[in-house]
Amino acid sequence: MDPKSTIAQSGRFHRPSLSTVVLLTGLLLSPGFCTAEDSLRHIVLQLRWHHQFQFAGYYMAKELGLYRDAGLDVEIRAGGKGISPVAEVMEGRADFGIDGSGLLVERAQGRNVVVLAAIFQKSPLRLIARADHGIRRITDLAERKVMLLRGFRSLALVAMLDQVGLLDKIVRIDSSTEIHDLISGNVDAFNAYNSNEPYVLAQAGVRTVQFDPASYGIQFYSDVLFTDQQRGEKEPELMAAFRSASRRGWLAALDDPERAIRLIRDSYAADKTASHLRFEANAIRESIMADVVEIGHMSELRWEKIRDQLAGLGLVPANMPLGSFIYTPPEDGLHWQDLQPYLLASALGLALVFATIAVVMRKNVQLQDEVAERIAAEQQANHLASHDYLTGLPNRMLLMDRLQGSLARARRHDKTPLLAFVDLDGFKQLNDRHGHECGDSLLVAVARQVTLMTRDEDTFARVGGDEFVLLIDHMPIDHARKEAERLALAVSSANASLQTQIVVTASIGVLSIVDPRGLNPDQALRLSDDLMYEVKHATKNDIAIRVYAGGNDAAGDDLPEVRHANG
Image (cartoon, rainbow, N blue to C red; front, top):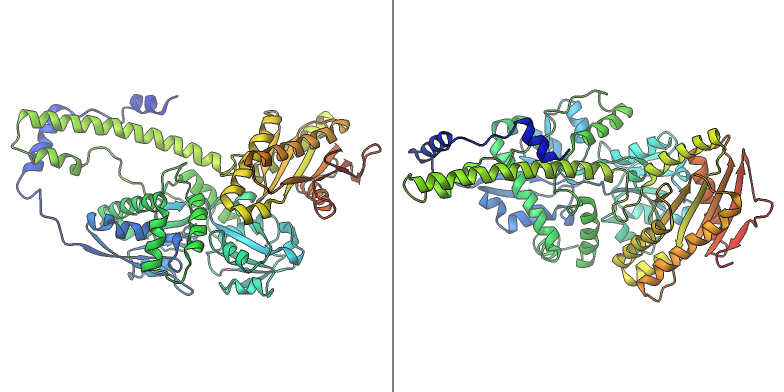
């Protein structure tokens, strides 16, 4: 059913009567209602880290006078090691703060924080490992030294490690926050933001592997604007004004990132190069997803899922109520500031009354539109929890869910699933020479080309930076090679569409599962990954095909163990 129809039928929105509007008009024109602008209110915003593009929206809101227009004089304080935004706010040294989904844990422990806006829909947290330490997949981190932030600031990474059964198998070290520890080889993996450390590592020539919590079903919000519940209850107008101005500041920063970069270098972080800040801006844009959902959007369902995952770690109660934890912005219905220009223009008269009625009616229509848009945004946010933001393909979490179903059907109905693991050869060179935008264009082109050659019931997923997996529910063994060659051709076609001098091909590992007994989804994916890796480090641009038959992982009788993609 159309959201607007539902709203209309519910009776929630009513057109005000003429007498109601006239009464409101009289009240607004009464002595004392309209006052002169108050002096600016001093407000402190506590950031969670050093000044950088991660907080560009707040800088822009101040620079453009958006806070001033809301009656606020905002002081933006840098964070750093040993500074807790929650402590700063709850102990009265700051009015607002920026933190992560760990705010739920803070709430569970008795600190009455209330979240106002989730600026980052996708967490930029990554676990970055050195590729030259023999780490390719996340399970390779067992018994390795892994740096994680203390407290609740690495929760997405902790939840990811718990999800794959590694949390009690790694050698956990409190993070120094110094990426030099990874560069020098002191640790095997390091907690990082994909907007910051990857740039430093690339400049240092360190080859890395990144593990994204979202690929493992961990969809935490990040860089969440919050305040003290008591303050919010006493001054709801302050919460609404600061939130609104901050959101508009973020829109301005994303619309003109170069201006934001100049502002940051001139006034906040002169030590960061423009190149580094541009890299950060591109990554931050992907985390905010402003072209998909409104900036700051929060879903109660998603917060519930985060709560459930944190409950699995023993950090919050399983049925912890979220009602007073999540701020609900005032509905854009009837607002006095929208009516005042009409009401103060002249003495109360019939023309003014009709003008006021028109404003009220229009605002009600706008409210219905806004609620419909929020419902659509909620649906889109839920879709993004299981799909890759850049390509729109299913992510690892959805792939694993479908793979489990495919293996179950194979056991019941004697089907032969096919799993093809694809890694792009030459992708790094393309990125290095032509930039990340060109690399992203290739990933999107690969997604498009392969989607065109597959059926609706097949799953083509993005599981890593330049890694994809094709899952087909049933594919006879004698068709496996042809399907893999079609995959390789699709990658070549995608590369050709970019018209660059870099040749990007595919290393493909294909697992044909004729008997799924004793095989779970993780094992199946690992076997196909191993096949791809063999090709990658042998000749590249090749296809390796093997048959899994109830625990006997071997090449088929008429299938060469490795077959060149071009025949």
